[in-house]
Image (cartoon, rainbow, N blue to C red; front, side, top):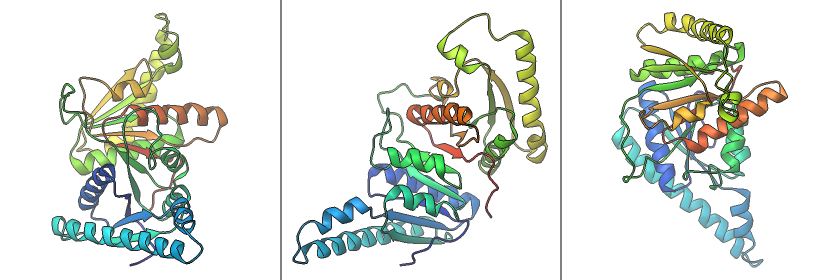
Amino acid sequence: MPTTPAAGSIVIAHDSSPHSAAALSWGLEQASVEDRPVDVVHLLSVTEAQQAAWLGASGAGLQALDDLRDQAVAHLEGLAVLARAQYPSLRIRTHVVEREARHGLIDLSASAHLMVLGSHGRGPLTSPLLGSVSAAVTRRAECPVVVVFPPRPASDTAAPAGSGVLVGVDGTADSVPVLEFAFAQAALRGHHLTAVHCVRDLIAAYVGDAGFPTEEEMLRARAVLAESVAGLAEKYPDVAVSRRLNRGLLDQLVTDADKAWDLVVVGGRRHGALHRLLVGSTTIAVLERAHCPVAVVPEGRTPTG
């Protein structure tokens, strides 16, 4: 079993849970659409290894660690057989990485084209894979990270399917890679793209003052949105684009009862402390409320091949 993912591959984190299965399915389809190699990775964490080694000083601990490793290898190889049968043209490799998940995934992101993680549910991010691990990975990864969520419960009112890609636009140079990623994904899958610029979002969300924004602010916001989208619309002429000004926070649109987004794209990093706080909290809010895959794209990033 190889130990180093291929440069420019789609790395899929897998921990044998049903939610990881959803991430695997999404990641394989994405790799097929992009014609990229796939690396399915199981992180054998430091905690697991320590628990296994603690079982006894007579060699039982080392045997338990070997058993954990063998089980992970066998499970991944079984997944690869099924994946190759479904996508015979894909180059699929599997890896067991004996490292704590957070640091292991961040390191793997340095050479990956895209990383895919599974979510364990709604609400605060407290699951083993999507908890502090996912928060750290989406904040510090060198490549875009897609978090795949379980579908809405069957009891929920079904939202219309096929609403396309939703991306937040703020007009800064650092956020250009975020918008370009959204355009590229819409082009690859033939989706409609909705570009949203939130106007005075903190005031609208938390104060609710009907007197804001002013007409001048709205004119500036329209200009920011138009200028942000214009160049990429020319680069991706086949992508149908809607431009939308929104009074409120981006995460409010993610749970819009009238929309079922195929993908939501947000930025993952800023240089200034205040921007880092605001963008980071918005990203986490989107991740906590989403029912669809969410791509977190490092801002100011130079794409890998």
